[in-house]
Length: 190
Picture (cartoon, rainbow, N blue to C red):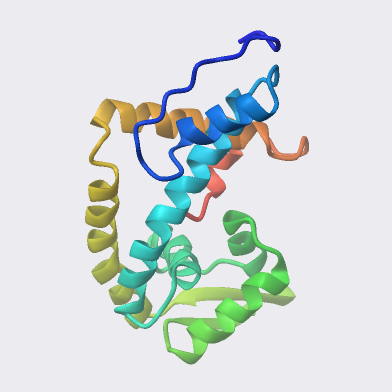
């Protein structure tokens, strides 16, 4: 879209519909290319609308999405493999400090254990316990069903296309030192 073009955004009547947000900005600041803003507003709306539902599901099991994400990083490696905390943090795009409190809580609940790394005298490894594995295996099918319901307005093909586009977008925002495709491998999202 040309920078000087004023698009005609149409609202579908929903409160805070993305089209209405863009129409308001178009009137308030004509001439701005609002395409990227629309994408970010849409992502935020999906996040804000889906997060409470996902957190309610997690609360049924006494955890939250942040804790579940740590467990899923360990579970998707097969559940028996131990990982260093720095690899888990990198996978979840967290700082070491951000991960430590999660690990503390998961260990206190008996879902993980931390032990020495036999290849690094100063390092630790984190392993999923059988209780942690069972918890992930109970929650994951329900989470997938919930997310499928949240995405029901899209066809399978549209979901695949959207996933691909978001993965490309995420990869483009990675620091230059990260290799292409890292976003697909490092996301902690189930």
